[in-house]
Image 1: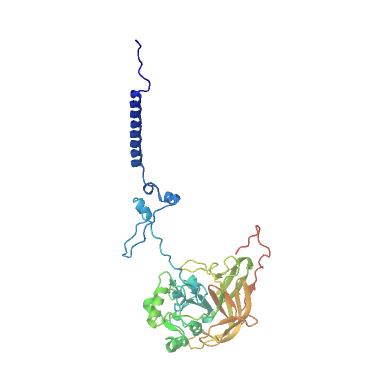
Image 2: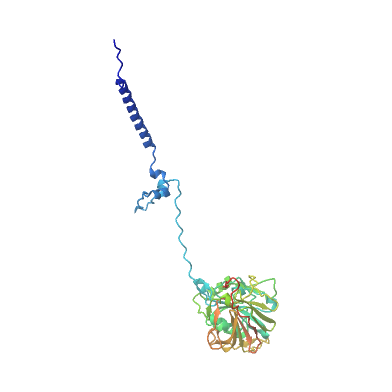
Length: 414
């Protein structure tokens, strides 16, 4: 009897194969579900830079007309990111204009300030004086017995302490009248006081006598009278307001131009002359384009209020006829021929030009002309005007011409 073998690949093999296929399908479906549920969205996982790189960022709608703030793309995708700070509104650059007495660029309000002229003592007990560094123009001329006196004219700057304040003279009123200044002083000659009574309400100047406005002046204890009377810009501006000296446009008496390029300025140069009891000396400094001032007893003349060296941009020397006033006071007061013309030297940018000064009337500006009759152009900045008796000696030493070749390295200073 023959034994029969079960056939290979029978029903048992088929059942196992079917079970394995079903198991594989089930496992694949399960893995697919797990992977699908774990996959993050692109918008949630990418930072703003990655979104841009992906090429398909979501754009947010613009803000509604209801005024509500639309969130930024950064805040919508990443709530923890800070809201960007708006850029500050740019501050406009203030408009600047030329100050009428110096040509310096200042605000329109500063350029319109009413000029203030103050009489200043120049005897040795009065030195060093206060106010020089803030003045637009400084006049100096002989007074009693030829002893000089200053008149500081302030326009765009409001000075700190100013003084010592001294008395008035008629010819100083004539110079202050060129800008109808508030004219501060302590008394004066009979001629000057009479003029101020008649024409000190704005016709020539606005009178600011210390005898009338004593609360705006004070005496210091560190000096003896009469060389100890002071005031300041704030109080002087207060007087101007009280007497009706209003701020408004001031006509410029002179023409101004910027500093000459440093490489073109001469090296050195000196100016020397004298008054009774005071000798004046200027050294030209080419680097700053100023004239460093020295006086008797002060090798380096300084402003006592600020400590700043006195160094104007322009120096003018005028020769003028002076004579005794004969006012019966026996104080040897002088009078001067302020209206007319005469010899003048004008120093600016290191070069001194001999020319002429001219003043057509009591209120007309004193102007300066070269030998050909052309008006001199001053350098932007402060001007010192020194008035001397006709025939007074003046020593001028010109500086050396600027180097023709640039310094080593080929760089020319400017």
